[in-house]
Image (cartoon, rainbow over all chains, first blue to last red; front, side):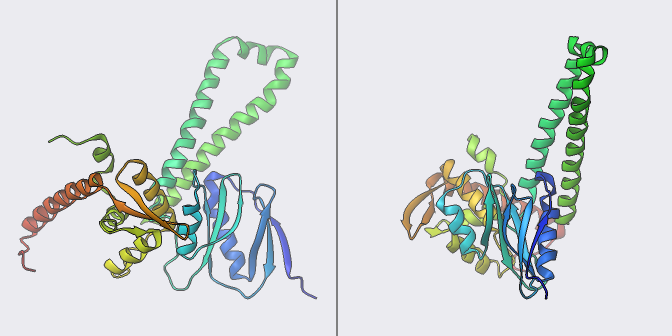
Length: 177
Length: 111
C-alpha cells in the first residue's frame, strides 16, 4: 500500500525563500502537493496527486488589505498557507516562462540588504561591548565564560545569516539575466 | 522647472510602473490593468501581482492615483492630475532618449 500523505520539515529563512520555493516545486513535480504548513511554516504537509508543474512563491507583503487577496487571485494564484505575515502562493503553469509574483527582483534584493545592514550593525555594536568593561568580565570570570559561549555562537550565527543573505542576492541577480 | 519630491522618487520610471500609470489614464481595477498591459505589449509584459499590488499601494499613498469606485471588493483606480503630470515628464524623458538613440544610429523617423 502506498501512502498518499507526507509530512516533511524544511527549515527556511528570509534569505532562502527561493530554495524553499524550488523544493515545493520539485515535490509537486513528483506528485506531492502542498496542503498546509505548520510549525511557523517549517513543516509541510503534502498529498499525493498527479505530478504537475506548479510555481510556489513565498511572499512577505507588509500591509495587507482585501485588495491583496483579490489581485493575487485574479492573477491566477492560489493561497496555500499563511503565518506571521508570510504567505505561500502557487499557480500551475506550462512552458518555459516561470510565473513570478514580482517583475523585478529589486524589492527582494533591497529586503536582503536591509537585513544585512541590521545584522552588520548588531555585530559592530559588539566591538563596543568588548572594548568596554563587559569584555574583560566575559573572559576573566566563570559566569562570564558561561555567557560567552552562547554569545559567541549568536555572533557567528548572525555573521552566517548575513553571508547567506548576500548569497541570496547573488542568486537573485543571476535570475535577472 | 524644479521637480517635486514625489516626481524625483518616481523618475525615471520602471517599465511596470510606467505601464500601470499609463493604464490608469482610464479608470481600471487591478485585474483590468494586468489585462490591458498584456494586450498593449502583445503579451511581452505580464505584471506580477506582487509588483502590481505594491505599486498601486505606493502610488495611492503618494497621490499619483486614487480610488474612484469600488465593486465586488475590487478597487477601481485612476491617475490623478499629479499622476498625469508624472506621465508627461516621463514621456518627455523617453522621447529625448529615443531621439538621441535614433540620431546616434541614424535611424530615420519614418521607420
